[in-house]
Image (cartoon, rainbow, N blue to C red; front, side, top):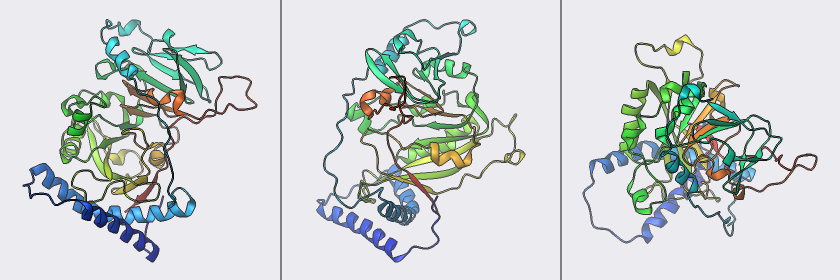
Length: 388
């Protein structure tokens, strides 16, 4: 973790470059008629002024480090990786599963374990009412609808929508970290019809309190709408019994270290928010944070990375959160679209980005099994944090 003490001359130069890039972009734009701002836009401007200097100085430090160690490059990179066609079949499967009758929980085993030594067809598994586990220490291939998916080591998942989450509760695990990436409602989502959105009110239905271990770290990704940020801080977290402790910022840069959007753009900002807290329970059964020893979640941290070409794909928080959790902490991601080693994941497209077409597969030369693959499992994403 980088903790800046002073801003050196080289870093000041990068800050100036980031600001110059912003001014150049603004000059190219045509003048627009003055329009009165609504309250949401006013709130957004106030918030932006608070965090802008933190973003500029912190990003400059990380970009400097990224350029020096080779994670970033000022040379232009030609071309982009081809992406598989998104046919949305996983979400369609979840919609069809909702037509099936609910099973008696008392007669249903909460988990099914995949044997990593055999070839598997997930058509033979119950993906919608039972949590599926890969218990082995290497990735395995499985087949679903004649398509191959890669399950990372020691992962577990449930493929369902918000109306069929009871198997996750019945799983019996209490988690020390829960990360949520809700499909927030916004105008661009409605126009593009790229993926479904969930009204804020429905997020209250998530059984988060039933999944939290004492002091569980809860982290929720929030888009650049103050309405959503206020909802998480002032309504959702209190409803779940989560104490708000910190706000982090994910800053998106290009491979050359420039903001993906002008920092003062009135439409799209080059950053999103992450609201963090710890579960304390309701007042009747809550406990004081002084009752247990837990690392302090620092406020105003930056996560700086080159965003994935996959739409709305967030950087993994597995390494970032590790220093605030016990070594054997159980972790859960809600609204996931890919799996992580050692984590439990839930969503209606939870294995979408585990399709084999998203990976470069190199079988181990010493492995006797053609199904044993290197233990890499997530979309590559470099992320570094900086404390301000």
